[in-house]
Image (cartoon, rainbow, N blue to C red; front, side, top):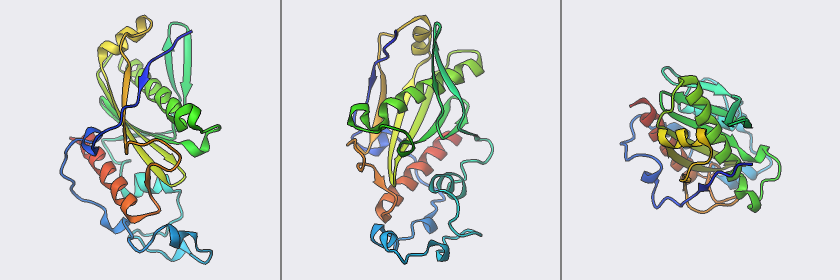
Length: 228
């Protein structure tokens, strides 16, 4: 059997996850500052009447709308895959993973998982972080096989639990992948987390204006990083 060491250190600031990139073309029309969790919890709230600057009202899923209609992450040269099957293969041992979305370009990827769709999300598995680490490694290994070589890779992760969003980043060297192919690497995979705390409701809350601004800013920066 194999055991891969993973570490989830807390990022001190968002620049440890997303490079210090000046945000351009921020989709401010999607902040909708008058909408918060109190409004959303009202029984008579009708989102069909909410115009957020698109030709259609909010009918798509939150994640699809955020990634593709709001942030345009499905535009060339970015490559989008929905529920791609990824495998981490060490000798004859295989671990499969199916993240909700993967956005790729060259040696960088953005992976999205909706943890509240998974079973048994609890403190014992890091509220889905164990699965996220496995999916990041599986995605990276899949990328190497497609490239037919070991590459340095930067992989961003987005974990969504209900309306709470947590951001992750790992940089995995070609040397690590080579060691992994031979068995178990000496080093750990370091996956930084922002915001720092880990729980069911510790991420940025999309139901609140401040949370939406933080998530949109981070994803705009990631998009600009992928395209630079």
